[in-house]
Amino acid sequence: MNFNIEIIRNDFPILNQKVNGKPLVYLDNAATTQKPVQVINRIKQYYEIENSNVHRGVHKLSQIATEKYEQARKYISGFINAKSENEIIFTKGTTDSINILASTFADFVNERDEILVSEMEHHSNLVPWQQLCKKKNANLKVIPVLENGEIDLVGLPSLITPKTKLLAIAHVSNVLGTINPIKEIVKLAHNKNVPVLVDGAQAIAHLPADVQVLDCDFYAFSGHKAYGPMGAGVLYGKEEWLNKLPPYQFGGEMVDSVSFEETIFNVLPYKYEAGTPNVAGALGIEAALKYIESNTIDAIQAYEDDLLEYATSELKKINGIRIVGEAKNKTAVLSCIVEGIHPYDIGTLLDQMGVAVRTGHHCAQPLIDSFGLPGTLRASLAMYNNKEDINAFVSATQKAVNMLK
Amino acid sequence: MTIKEKQETIIDEFSMFDDWMDKYAYLIELGKDLPLINEQYKTKRYLISGCQSRVWLHAQMQDGKMILTADSDAVITKGIVSLLIRVLSGQTPYDILKTDLVFPKKIGLSDHLSPTRANGLQSMIKQIQLYAQAFILKSLKK
Image 1 (cartoon, chains in turn orange, blue):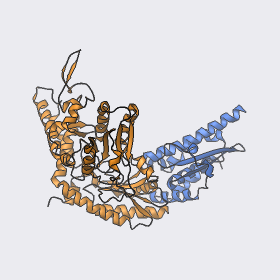
Image 2: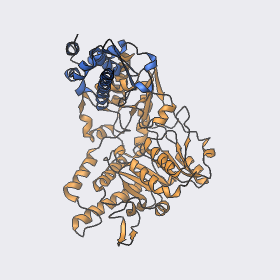
Image 3: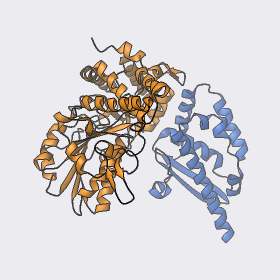
Image 4: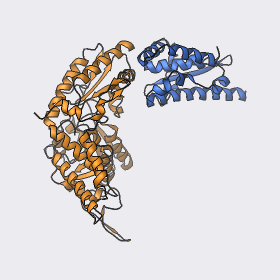
């Protein structure tokens, strides 16, 4: 048996903490996950015995750091089943990944062209495209979300036009938990020669993200939402695309040869990694994904699905509660509202009772507005959550509702 | 009652609770009891920025005193704003501006609030002070 919740919980030192005198119940994993000792120790080890600048020195330490850094890239490329490690660009995180793409993709967008996003996008997969469209006098088109929280797949083909230059969509919605049918979406887009960017921030820790199965052209994710460190993430891009796109930033490392007259840029993936990279961050992501792999993503998904189902049915027992987002395919995110009560009030009382959740629009204002809500109360799961967490969350929510009604 | 006396009453009231859940329960009660603001003031113009929940604040002068009314869509926020109103509404703009608002700290509110809520509280206080300044300027012009 790979998946042992007791062992897993012991790997996360922070879970032993008390908040406001109560044992911590951490259900804000869609914002960021906690880190296991395996990740913390990996980063510590790097700074203790391996730290050096990569791809530069002739000395031993630099060789070790370079080797480890490139091994991390290789491991990550295997984890998402990229064809080659050249397709893995280290970034600061999902937001950075998407901004890099939006900025380099600008060369391919002209006046009156269209970029397609879904209505459920996080601001980080919406604003970069909106701003690019503004700059280029192009049009941002939106794939609607149905009332149950699924995207309108039936209406999608008609939205992809000869003017469409790119389709950008979340793998999993950070508000609704919806798992979008990426394979089908990519097929529809590719039929019309439109490349697809998938925002994998909320997916990478919860379900298989196989970029060859999905066949997406770009995939972005953050380390910190998958048990890894903050400030480090990945942009996957098909090699043919990354070769076509221009460099993003200029400086050291990304160059092959430089004179005052001209510069020959380095090959992939270095072309996109100007300056000294976040080596500890890359190693941290590698350790985090290895940690996921040691428990197997399938077991994690099955466990979290059960927990989500349990949480949903328990939460529904509270009078006046409404689950926001009831897609058939859902993972790890549970949004709700209680009739007549502001989510912020519930969140404040939950915090007082040691339960960490998030309230508000979750950086997806257009989506929340389209549902006509002031925001939602969101509990989001990770592999270390258990039924006790859910029970504590539900009974604290019940108590808060009683106080506020 | 002076502002100082009103602050002391509030500090006394809150000293009865040891547990923050009880303090919140009291704030919720106060929030529910806050007199309704005139609907015409629940517009964007009277909205205070910097709060996660929406807060509307209206001020007008009556016999040299500033009368404050407010509303919020979150009831704990409403409870907090009701304390400000209790202390500051019905006072002169001069008194409001020279007041040292100690009660949020004394009742533990300032330290206990999440940073977003603490910012919200600061925004409310700032807005009230801006109203007070505006009324003083207006009276000087006359």
